[in-house]
View 1 (cartoon, rainbow, N blue to C red):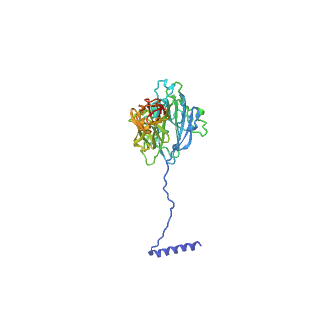
View 2 (tube, rainbow, N blue to C red):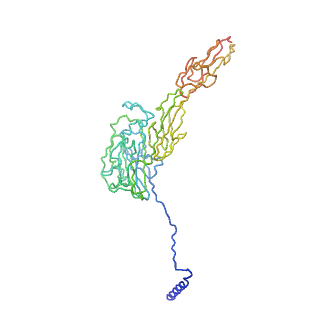
View 3 (tube, rainbow, N blue to C red):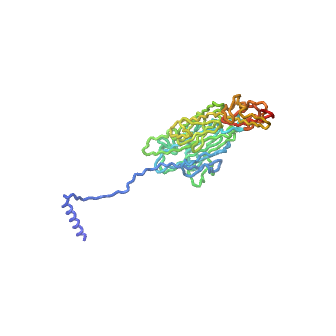
Length: 466
């Protein structure tokens, strides 16, 4: 059987060769289907394990997430001297090697209000239009290091903040920008700088103290992050020490806001990347307050609190450039009534503005005072034979005639005399209406910007009057 098959094969070969001149050749086809080009991913995810005064802080701890969901590393609204906290942040990048940068910017250090104990220290009263008149940022000390995931500062772990630094000195005028891993740096392996491999988890930690902060550290246990936290700060301590017992009342009611950002960039085909020492997401916005007092208004810039509303509300100071993350914002204000506000510069008519990375924009809010308004109404009672009409009692504001029942614009914050031309045989019954109406003819009314009053002057005949 094998021999027959072999002969058949020869016959076929000969047959093909015989007809070769017709264009038929020996051939073979291999098919590759479903070829794919797929982009890899650089998707930075962050979780945070936070401790506040020796307890887990649920408000500032979260599982793996994007920070755009309103998550905050700092959210403490009732700080007292000697309060302290520690956080360990884990950074996760997808399947591509990546450079990592961290940027932190102090966006306000505000003396939000002034109470008696604070003023007794010699602290000046709060300036509502100055978001940098507080003391709290100078009394909050911080320490950052490259952690191994156990929330404990252990001797030998790499510091990334040049030791203990106040929040004010750390990130006031420029962002506190750290090259966690770029072509020249790697805070976890300083001896071998460069990107972190895709799929790895890296940790950085921060400790803060409302007072003096010391960093003695504890012995390295070599265990890193344990899911049950059995080697964490509740067991071994944080490795730092806080002492705020000597602080006074100068920072009572102060408030601080901070912007924290992390950046991840692909390392492949990007061989010379540097974090650069500044946050490229940031833009700068200057809000300017202008007031026009041409109708007797007496408001000044400090009567208004300027605000920029994004995912959070940031108080800003007139004429002071403030850094913001790129995004959409609304510029607004709080203040007193009696003025009409308008927007100019880079804001639209509603105060809306879009900030792109690297922008430096200006928005001006102009407030123009409204005149005050007085309406005088004449009432005449003729029940004793009198026959005089309303028009026979001319109404007067500051000695000038004004129409009956008509609103008249007057200068705000200035006394205005209200009277009438009296007639023989008639006497004044009353002046009624708004609380600021005078009780007698010749009395005055002083109105705020935009305020309006109505006063009714009633006269009655004496009897036998014509």
